[in-house]
Amino acid sequence: MFSFSKDAILFGVAVMLAFLVALYVIFPHYPLQVAAGALMVIGLVYPILLLSHHHSTQQQRDEVLAALVTYGLAVVGLVIWPWAVPIGLGAHAIWDFIKHNTGRGAKVVSWYPPMCIVVDLLAAAYVIVLLLIGWI
Picture (cartoon, rainbow, N blue to C red):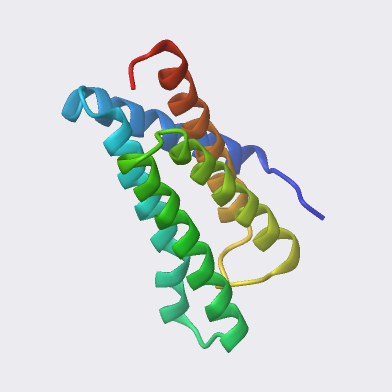
């Protein structure tokens, strides 16, 4: 059963706040590029974790497919349609939910997918707000 621990939620919020501070301090004029880059990094985490343990061919396929979708949406968001970036973040949150409930893909500690869902959804909401107010 899916559950969010208070610690996973707080850690996810802290990660997102740190990301926002870094964004405004280091790259204040490139929010879409930073969000798309973050989406690409987020998409790499689980495939990299495949290297840490033996995983079945199906688990490897699941992670590579999820990473390709994530990367594809990041590139589409940068080149063609900026709304693809928050859609990619939302899609990754769905993948986290699936992983947490089914155990598919790379094995991770149980608190990681809920924390990642919080980060994915907050980042998607942030990019959506920027798109709606015309900053992107």
